[in-house]
Image (tube, rainbow, N blue to C red; front, side):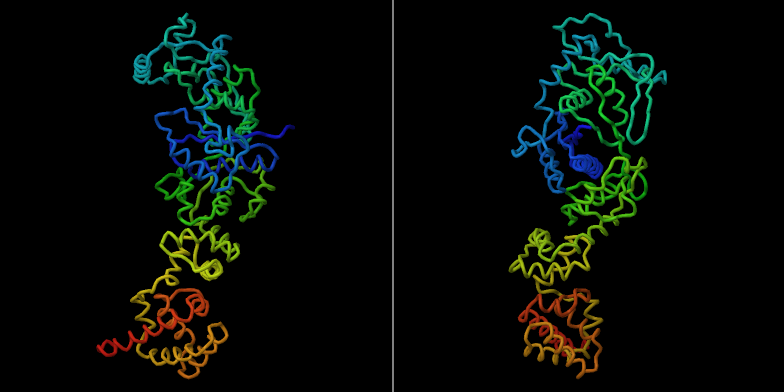
Length: 478
């Protein structure tokens, strides 16, 4: 069996969303598993809705999740993938050939005429289909006309789907559909088949929302005299309420997930598990996905996209990174807040200390605010932990810390000495220090926090807390 050739063919009428990204991923995994080729084709023939901005956004999303493609007019250049607007000659040649062989015909029915017939069919409550009145007419070649595919009117066309089996469609339910508009613009279904033929696509793996187009395309493959690719229509993706996934379920754009602090490998892992499985395994490296992915493991049932599951996967993937790697991927989120780490080593320590309490890189950056800005204590946390009776132990601890080397064993010894002197419990003293230096009562371990902040900032913040308690006592607030 020759190596398969698959393609992902988005239309640049919007951003790359979860559904399209899952389809792209399945194609990419299949190609990589089978040592085949993965092609990216931008289907931009809808000039009214396609924009260059969306083309670039799709390419950016594909690169971010690591789905590299194998061919294109200039893979290393700014365009990279195939684009239908650059392939007009292929469509023109195919249309002329079909006309010459009598497999297509010219049609001069105007949009107004077709609309009137459509309304007449609606009034009679019957499905509207083109009645074929131009099918055997002798339309002069110099008269502006659309080109329609001549379909059989009897029998049925069968789609053999790798996931769903045999799906028959009666030909009487289809009509002679337009290949080329009167304006000269080729239609979506026409371009898709011509491109799949010329690119030698062996497998068409796409969403089941395209299933209605497939019988039309099967007829066109036959008219062109080419063998059919293997079709596999993957099931739709649902939201947690089991309705079709949409914006009302929250972020669905790939780049929106990136901006929300999701790791690309976490999104890829989550998308791969939508209608595909490998036993009970939930977490995969990219290499494992490639090695385990097979088409026969794709289910036919709709999959539910659960944002909570994505966040769990993301948190797990964050913990699996080295401190240096986590610091590097967190850096843009720190920079977005105007913060800069003194060096990569410090940033790695910061990231490693914060990741236990963060599900996303955004949460990690937000939780790290104390490391960059002097905090204002949370009123509830301060009321609970920075009480008058803690002022003397804090002052004692401050004096011990001022004399200690700034390493964990001496810091720990200073705390233990203050606890022995004051009779406080570690939780009370540590929480008071935590509120003083971070502004809240939730943070990484207190010694990690003090080491991150360094001697001068830690001492200054504890000193300020003690002064605040003294001032409150002076005002009679204590």
